[in-house]
Image 1 (tube, one colour):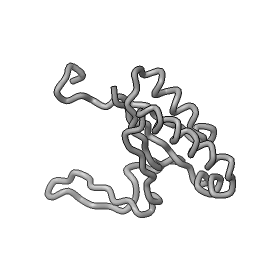
Image 2 (cartoon, rainbow, N blue to C red; image 1 turned 45 degrees about the vertical axis):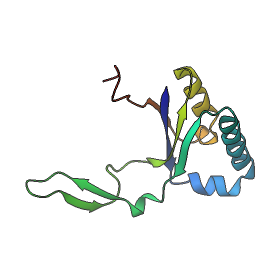
Image 3 (cartoon, rainbow, N blue to C red; image 1 turned 180 degrees about the vertical axis):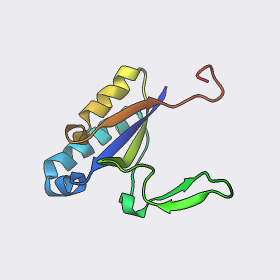
Image 4 (tube, rainbow, N blue to C red; image 1 turned 90 degrees about the vertical axis):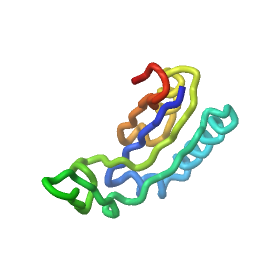
Length: 118
């Protein structure tokens, strides 16, 4: 089953990671592990949230505003899509991700639109 691991950042996260090579090495090691096991489907970091545009419903055409959907201490910073045998394995990968020490991470099954998940 495929899972999306949603990585959240906080204001200090990128500074912490840029100054700590050990964290970058952990991340690279985990990415290599899940590449070798064929569990990694995709992963990408996201640009700083100041570059975000949010499209909101309105009485007429949707309204576009600057910034993320909600004001929060954490923001969506990137993702991994993994294909794992179990939910527990997807959670294990998320718990090993170095940023789990500094910000929350969500693990969500990806809905199989042709299957019984609906």
